[in-house]
Amino acid sequence: MASMTLFHSPLSPFVRKVMVVLHETGQLDRVTLQGVDISPVKPDATLNQGNPIGKIPALRLADGTVLHDSRVICEYLDQQHVGLPLLPREGSARWRRLTLMSQADAILDAAVSSRYEVAVRPADKRWDGWLDAQSEKIRRSLADLEQQHLAEIASGFDLAAIGLACALGYLDLRQPEFGWRERQPGLAAWYAEVAKRPSMLATAPTA
Image: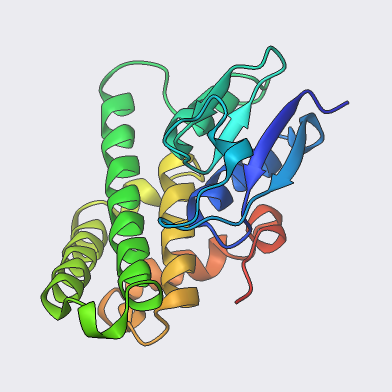
């Protein structure tokens, strides 16, 4: 029986991260999905209860406590199942994986920010320099992951890998012209395989 409520938007890559974790850890039946339709200029009153910044994803626990931020929720869910952990509990490996998680989230932050700049801000107020800076941030991050961390990313489908997979999926959805595969063939080959996982197929966004 579902004991938690996940505030959900199927096009949010941060929500997708949580959904992938629910699938991977066998906890999907513990959660009721509550759809929300928000933007930076359109809040949702129900979502804001216990979550004053109005952030998604947000997870309301059985006792009414609300967790928000995908990294917080994913780590919480990782400690609620009986399988192998998706994030090392201690030691240097934990800090490395947390840093890779942060880098994947930074790619998502830049991509989502670019999306809002184009889709929400009036055309005459768009800042091309801002968009260029976000694109460069994504390119630097992907190049670093390809050159320095590909073997570690490919070592298992853990929280860092899930975050990166969702980031690459979001780039495909919102910026199909970005051309990251040509520059990062190693990441492209890795993503082609992990995108076949049932958790990724079940959560794949459609425009």
